[in-house]
Image (cartoon, rainbow, N blue to C red; front, side, top):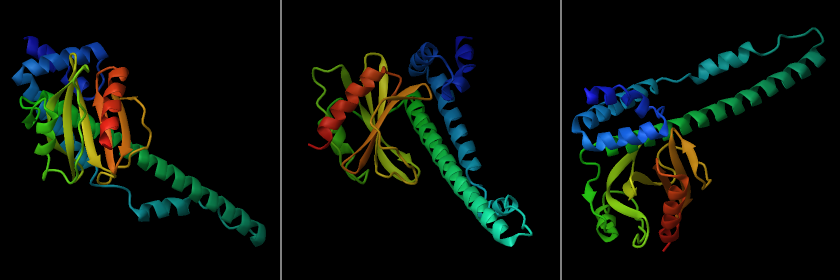
Length: 252
């Protein structure tokens, strides 16, 4: 009966719509309940298949052209003034349309990116085997990725810090393979995603600051041709501290 109560919250949990305290409680339950964890993983996979199906079709250039033509002003008797006004209006409409279309595409891509990262993070923590290489030793985890991802990276020394390395696995963003590392700080798990820059068709912004994305705290940055994304429900301060450790060792 208790599991039924938890499962009734799974959809809101996967969509990032639960309050922070409820997210943490359900996180803890999923780590200790294989049945609910399997249900959460199945729902993540179902969501991803629906999202991929919805992305197969997009408005064509021909449709965009028809819309632009439909908003062009009609011809006027004074061809000189009308031509100038029509050209200016059409030019403005095209510029505004192009900018709006570009911003809209970028916003959609960004939302898709964070939705994909959320799915990867939640599915990994809900899995009974969240990592493929289980070790707190950076000298064990780093070599494991050799030949599995098309780049190398360094991991920080965590002794005398609040962080523990739990292990890692290979993750995919689009068609691009990357490293997915799991760290723990107190009762929270943090995902660190490392992908080549750019990763597939995804566009990233160049800021390095902690932001709130779908109930998770996120910091991302470019360094040495790689894109780092630190992702989890830990506090912004913890996300920032782990990011600083990764930045310090990345170029060494």
